[in-house]
Amino acid sequence: MKKIGIMTTGGDCSGLNSAIYHITRGATKRGWAVYGIIDGTDGLVATKPVVLQLDAHSIPPEMAPIAGSVLRNGNTGQNNSFERAVQMGRLPQFTKQLKKALAEINLDAIVLIGGNGSISLAWATRDIYSDLQLVCIPKTIDMDIPLTEKTIGFDTAVQQLTRFCDDLMLTARSHHRWFVVQSMGRKCGMLALTAGIAGGARAILIPEIKFDVDNLIKHIKHSDTDYGIIMVAEGVTLRGHSGEPATMISRKLTAAGISNRTAFPEHMQRAGITVPTDRILAAQMADAALNAIENNETYVMTALENGEITTVGLDAVVTSGHPDRDPNIDGLIISNAMVDLDNPLLIAADNMGIYIGETK
Image (cartoon, rainbow, N blue to C red):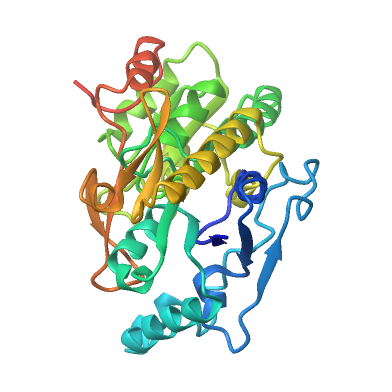
């Protein structure tokens, strides 16, 4: 009988519990024992790691769509994290402790549900998992993981952000006012772009495309309305300025005589009841992860490719896309998926008269 572990790491999002639910049910049907690791890698190096045996009834189906993770994702503010280990010069001891903890649990395989930082880190410290199979499932609201067309949690985040804009649009109309909405997404603009189109934004600013503030102002002033949404991704930068990009854009608009306010949906983008498409993706990726374990695959990630779920090597994931240095872990390179200039959504936005920057 196989013994498999599940852990969720990195930022939370909707769809994690759906993935845990389907992994547990699928593994139990195969006659495998399933263990949930509380607080991910942070929890493994705690004084008393908490590992719970799960069965098909651990998460009732009506609870699976709830946001967050029943296993929790760790507390990077504490001393038992990769970031703190690096800061304190204790990374070798930390990774040794992780490997020892996994050996004591005596697993055959582990399913790591994480974002691009967690997956890149798992590959960089892959010796930790050399004695068992490692299968990763991509989850992030940022949609910034290479080699997969969709990540768990993205569609629900789009729903949350769009609903936020829908509500703002009503007060914007009442007061003849523009709202500068700052989305999450880190250095990728896919969340801002997708929700911006869905929410009827008149301008969408993303890190991948340069923009001119004067042209943005002209676009707003010549709009056929005197209210609306200007979507700004959190990774946007303005030369010569520092701070929240939405705040900086808002100041420029105010100086140009355009009535506006900023709005920060913040972590509500990570919340919300998981939408059906994310639930379905979680089920498919859970099944693919279990199949990978059954087929003795290791160091792989489940991925949506051309409409089908497959697995790709972690080495391919971390060497694809756009590499960038991790801001918290010195020496760690993270590969990001970015919005390409030929993305159909960008083309559609431009054709609809949405200002998306200087693309020509």
